[in-house]
Image 1 (cartoon, rainbow, N blue to C red):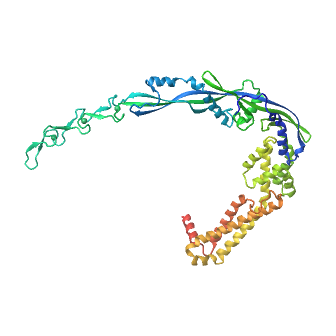
Image 2: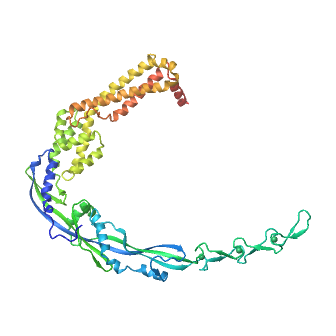
Image 3: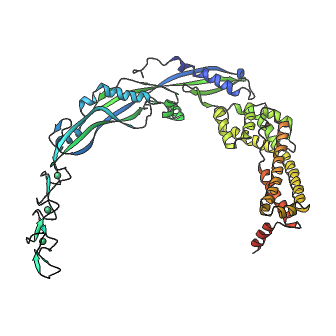
Length: 511
Ligand SMILES: [Zn+2]
Ligand SMILES: [Zn+2]
Ligand SMILES: [Zn+2]
């Protein structure tokens, strides 16, 4: 990242309205208008310099480690007090270290928003890191390296356990008392844990009597973004809010610059500047003047009358006529499909949810169409598709259910079930259910086939269901399942030889 603010914004900033004209032209093209019916009539584009800064606060931290013995690591300090002094204030040499500033500038340069509207960020610094040591007496042994033996209380002697401290043992054979062989009559023996010394070596300090406190002192920097938006007028404020300050930088709507860092009052200050272009434009669209506010280097339309509503209205009306009319008309669907947006909605609705399709087209057309029209486009495209497909689906459902009924009748009443029940008795339940499933699948496929055939005839080829993807069955899939199940049950129960497993279930349900 180069430091320093530019004298002038680059030329691209002043071309956002021309750029917007190109984008808008492509958006309206094929949606009741042609790209060349839209042109930029005039514009007044300004670049707003927004300022702010990254304020960097340093803090000192320490990580301590205690090691037994006296082994100096780094400079030795006089004690804890001197260590506390090192931690109490930031070393001016560290604060003024050019390497540290460069390090922080690097963090800003690598940030996707170049530091603009950055969330408070804490980084650990290599600069100023130092290791000191402090020698301390071991607290467990008070620096003596040993502790008094607890079992003998420092005497080095313990009661003889063979004679219980009496010095005599009774002989089992003679019954006479004899001098204890273990303590030789002295009643006490050498204490085992301290081997008679009365002292145990201190394990805490590994018998050194001292500790070395190794103190790793390091610096951390907290980066805080402080905007300077005191002088901004309300229009610019609302444009920043439209993008959100952070996205304005990370999505490249504004170009961000950083100036040379300075140190003041114990902090590092890095001045930032953002160039935000804003254009007040007037477009000529099919002979009509439409004003708009264009902002950011991506030429976003921030404010504009939803002029595409009127252009696309005939297509939406055609869709409403299809969904509410008595007859599905190929001419009406062709009228709707003349609009790129509606073609896309119709095609996408075959494989995506209404919500998803709405958000997709809002993404592309949100700046030039009202929400009401966007919602209507999706809603009526969906209703029209249903209207077009539901007639054939109903026919498919009726034919499919009839086919399933014939299949079930043949199976249960023409002896197939009876024969199989005898020859393949162990598998008969699976076979019965497979017949049920076959009937349902036949009905389900007929529903989809009939809908696909009709939609292929009515819809333009590029959005009609193709050979690989049939039109969905919709609610008729569930109807087909319920109808075939019901038919199958009726016939199975009415058959001369009702499946035994089914009869069993029925009798259990009855109680
Ligand atoms: Zn110790
Ligand atoms: Zn002892
Ligand atoms: Zn003894």
